[in-house]
Length: 404
View (tube, rainbow, N blue to C red):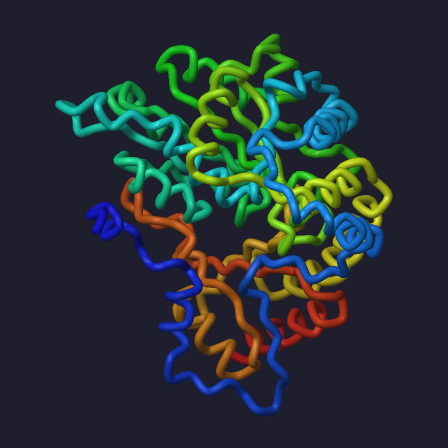
């Protein structure tokens, strides 16, 4: 077996099941889960119909590079959404959701033959983070280095925590904007810093943007490619942006997204994916074209989240340190000190036992770095169900905190 597999840590939801072992949820309350970030809003009917009407495409092998019409649709969306021009033939690839692309991009980029004397290559990740970043680093033969977010700066990542010797070994940096779990959006000045560091140390930036279309203020979140253009980097050197339809269009089961950016990186990524067998089925491409070409369903979806967060956040803010995020569909709430001593794991266990509400301990989404686990003492609340269910969960949490 590949010995690198032994470096993988249990996924947060495996740890959650272990945490809840022996806990009997209150029979007085129906179960509500805010633990998993899986969209629950209805899939638009026109997307399901497009998928059904193109099933004859299952009779043919799809090209790994995708159909020209698919790539053109993605390029058109980038232009409308970010004002960015890309070459559809050389700067876009279909991917089967951002998770597989975030993982496989690392396998394309990382060169484990480099920096051997210094300990091998490094992948820099935000902390807290999406655990695929860590797994991708380990299985690519690299060491993940975690950079903590700063609550005092709207959970911005403190890149100054990385020293020069580590930057010199860095081959890949993951950026998540809007962030999971904090919802923070990377501003232009932070992108400028990352691009300057990339130029100095020649690492690739992977910009994970799967939550980009769920936001709560009038200004849409800045994207990595958009930031590059604003800063005069129209060739997108060493930059790949990754996005998907899962959250935007409520089709997580479709497993459809795309990557865009540096043409040379895209060329190498296509070579890897051709051997890896990562082609997107033709009916999925057709349904995806319909999704990327339509914005009305996205606006309606975003409005549902806005109404939901506007009702839920004030209820929780009365008893916890929590605020409306920049974007995404999570609340990143601080556990009050009087509840289980501020322990996120004790909070989650007791809440399930007493009120049958599941939340995810923040410490499961982070690693100890620089002497602290930046997720400890917080819980992630995924507001993915309908407003009534989320509001009921919020009232139960408020009652739980008040009674502790």
